Length: 165
Ligand code: FES
Image (cartoon, rainbow, N blue to C red; front, side, top):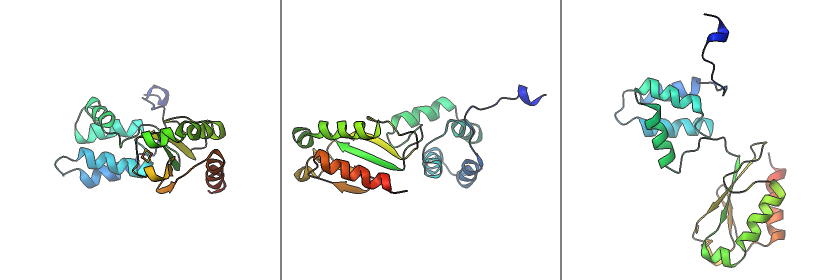
């Protein structure tokens, strides 16, 4: 068979990491969740070719895996940014101008909810109350919380992360 005739996956992914993860959990009962979690930890998301690899090696249908992936919000099927910017859209933040904060993010980085910049540096997520209402409006960048935001403060936060690797 010529190389051209082989089934070529569109997404070029080094599957060695996924195979190592599966090797580790292969004999475990209920391996699917820990395998998917470890794959996401390794790649930062669940690349499509790994879904088919897991299906084949754990002997489950790919459709079952997609069912799990879409049910649990923790899983992501697209690459995500190094910095996840969570904009709180809860009531307190909404009242204090969360919409303007989200707009600022879109104006500066060109991304809205669930979108990622092309350089894979930032992903935006609009979320429900993150429990810091006293500091509304609030965003989180990865684990760091920034409150009492104005457009100017938001700009400063964005610039700070843009300047970082
Ligand atoms: S509503 Fe934003 S932190 Fe509670």
